[in-house]
Amino acid sequence: MIRFLLALFLTFTALAAVAEPVRIKDLVEFDGVRGNDLVGYGLVVGLNGTGDGIRNAPFTEEIMANLLERLGANVTGEQFRPKNVAAVFVTAQLPPFARGGARIDVTVSAIGDAKSLLGGTLIMTPLNGADGQIYAVAQGTIIAGGISADGDAARVVQGVPTAGNIPSGARVEREVEFDFAGLPVLRLALKSADFTTAERIERAVNAEFGKRIALMQDSGTVAVDIAAAGMRSPAHVLSRIEGILVEPETRARVVVDQRSGTIVMGADVRISRVAVAQGNLTLRVEESPLVVQPNPFSDGETVVVPRSNVSIGKTGTGLAEVRGGTDLAEVVAGLNALGVAPHDMIDILKSINAAGALHAEFLVN
Image 1 (tube, one colour):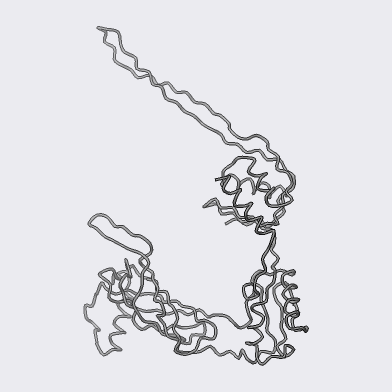
Image 2: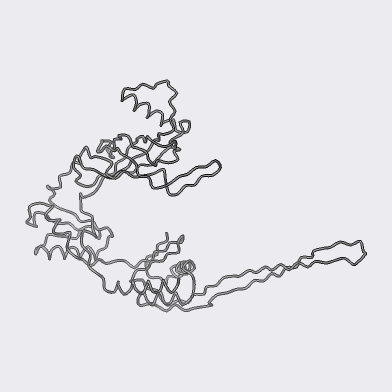
């Protein structure tokens, strides 16, 4: 594992040494070009006895009764307790500039005690935005991502059968009002704010148009003057800006995941000269019971005499020196010289960071 990590880090360092330019469209978010979250509350029918229990989810019965009443069937006061229906939340994202009649994907999630939504059909469900207005209507057959099987004394569940998707399951009914064509200034919001990257984007855009139309406002924003660009609309300006190549600047960062033992280091990570000792205690307990027999023709009885041998040993690599690294290869080589597992290396990196010898942003997940 250690050799594999070292090879992986060395490969990454070689690639990072020759950084490839990235399109501006992959580095920024454009002002006004954004989606909107939608949510709705609906009913899934057609389940094979895996729906909500009416006693534990009375709201399922209420919405079913209201739906049937709107369709002309009055079930008020009736003992209507089906097991093939389930109450669900329906979520979706309205893409930017989505027009009426367009289709979008939706996600369906059970909110009651339904065991599975496999094979169910979502009944027409309005999807509301943050302003309470209906922007789409969802309906269709659910594609669940799990399997559930029950027996008399056991149950097997694989995946999450209580959630699923409906591809193109909602139709847009209302458009978001936004005058994109009338924007006098278009702002580019960097996904990772950095002054150097923002300045490079400014220079690249101005060089592309041959005039000063872009201005860096802060580390995360570059403003583009649409009128100064001399083009017909902001859409034409964006189509030209999107493909401009810029080499982004990244901060030195170390990200570790304690659950999986994953360690990711940026190419600019530096470690000052430091000495590290890493070892483990080994506890060994050996039982060697001795059976004692009584003398012949005596009234004694056989007795088992316990004998235990307990020892504590300490193993480790001793005090190892991690020299100051000038690049990622030397940093990883110094850490791997300790001969420790990835989980132990995470603890070592924490200690090096606490000692002030790790010159990078240290993030722990």
